[in-house]
Amino acid sequence: MYNMLSVIISLIVCYNIILTESKPPHIVFIVADDLGWNDVGWHNPAMITPNLDKLANQGVILNSSYVQPLCTPSRTAFMSGYYPYRTGLQHLVILPFSPAYLRTNYTLLPEKLKDLGYNTHMIGKWHLGFCNWNYTPTYRGFDSFYGYYNGQEDYYSHKVLFGLDYRDDEKVVEDQEGVYSAFRYTERATEIIESHNTSNPMFLYLAFQDVHAPLQVPKRFEDMYSNINNKDRRIYSGMVSALDEAVGNITKSLQQNGFMDNILIVFTADNGGIPTYGGNNLPLRGAKSTLWEGGTKGAAFVYSPTLLNKTGYTNTQMMHATDWFATFLDVAGGQPEKGVDGITQWDMLRTGSSSKRTEFIYNIDEVDKNAAIRYGDLKLIEGSAGRFNDWYSVPTSNLENIKTADPLDGLNTKTDLWVEHFEIENIAESAEPQYRLFNITADPTEHFDIADQFPDLVTKLRNKLEEYKKSLVPAFNPSFSPKSLPIFYDGVWTPGWC
Image 1: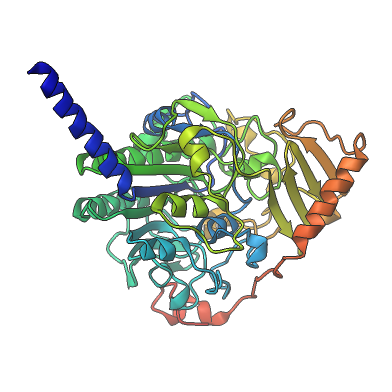
Image 2: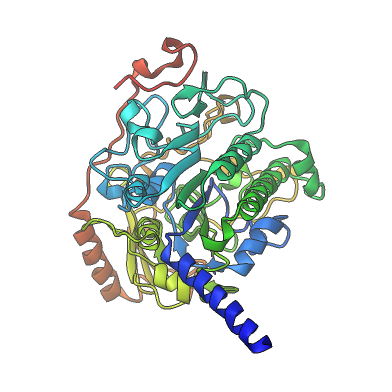
């Protein structure tokens, strides 16, 4: 009798596993804004991120997951599967008053997932253009959108420069002044989770505002780091912990509502941290906006209680931001169209096997006249890597703010709440070598330029880079349009002017 009962229980378990595996899983894609490599607990125990740490340590930590140097380019790669230089969004970011956008000839990830039967929801930062309704989230595949169109805004007033930027689908949100964005995003995510029928697959894109400037956080999070004397670093660290709490509350809701039996959770930064606003990327070189590893290697992990065959380790295989597009489609039972740059890495993530990728482009920017390519162990940088070229220590006192290194010197960014690097023009004019070569496997912190020692390798990678440049789409950065100004739309940043 006992043996028969054991057999029945085993059959039920096997049936449930088969049933789970036959259904497309729910996908939760969490993107942290401007999060430094050294700003998560699994890299730096001084950071208080217990919820993220638990997911990372019980899942797979990604040690070679690359993103773009800035916000708009990374989101372009995530959503389209194309290198930004092939879309025209490789140079800087989309500004509030510019009629730039991710062109509609690219079918975006949520559109693809909808075709596969997914309900698609987005919360947080869009930053892929909004001058026309057709370029906004609910016209690009998302069933719902709650968040903002631009690159940053005040965490409490939800304004950028002199206009409100806060939407519930297409409707302006005017009743959330004074509510910290991460709190409201958590509430909205919970509402979506609780109302969703788990028999249908869900794609939830959580593009958090944290930890992008301006540096703002409720005091209880800042007080968690009372040992840090540097104000910017203390507030920034509190913002990381606010993000961690939000992720913890959302994953708790997923658990309570029956999602965890068939779910893939992905967490990644969109670029490196910026040392002038509290972020830190040690031991990596450079920062946000640069082609150095500190600007392009994203803190990331994947987590699933049921879908990953190998967990609890650090994966060192190569992966690029464009790969999430193809990987998510593979997980969902689909595939991308021919020509995309992304490669599915689902087998690698699921089993710990080798990456299908052996090379990638960091960026090609014909305006700044710089580029970088990774080929196997080697990395070639052409032109200037950017303004942040050092290894920046974690500041411990208020005297250690690195304001002299800020490419936005001269702008009152703390007042106008705009700290994207849109004034990094002519960076190639500095007295730097035209080509630098690094062995990233042997020298991940980029201390040793070996270009002079291996000129043949420099030539080989230059030739490969030139081949990639043949598919470059000219940078799409239209100039200021007065039609964009919120004064024409009751003080709100609004589509409909291009």
